[in-house]
Image 1 (tube, helix red, strand yellow):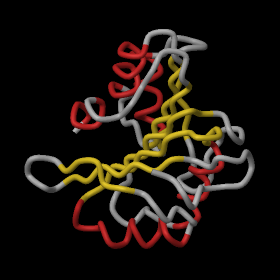
Image 2 (cartoon, one colour; image 1 turned 45 degrees about the vertical axis):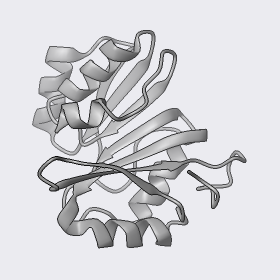
Image 3 (cartoon, helix red, strand yellow; image 1 turned 180 degrees about the vertical axis):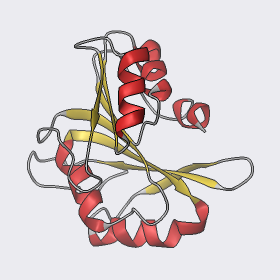
Image 4 (cartoon, one colour; image 1 turned 90 degrees about the horizontal axis):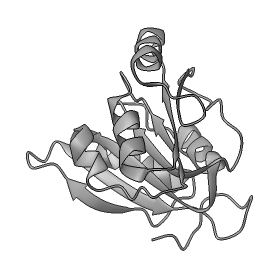
Length: 165
């Protein structure tokens, strides 16, 4: 699944990218290698995964890992150009999606990766959070995984953009 995501997500040099639920951090490290001169942060709710990712892959100031509580992202407002959230089943709440929007910079990109079986729930949560124009950009070959993209606000501090791509 990591390659499915990385091959479709726009990652550029100088970007600041956040990965939510990054597991052992391979996807974070690979995104950093592909982007060159980028900062990539991985968050996970598992202390064990974050410890392993930190031990194997951390490059201070360039590739970093943190734990989070599954509800509130422990990062500053408007800190990232890209957010890639790998949503476990039943975790697509409007509150979480609003928080993902909070950490995006103006015109930042939000990517949601989730099981196709919860597609309606994720789209409902997006609409409740104000992301009205998110679009599907890919499905895995077996149709089990969906990748959605939404663009952040045109105006800083305004939240999700009603006119996003």
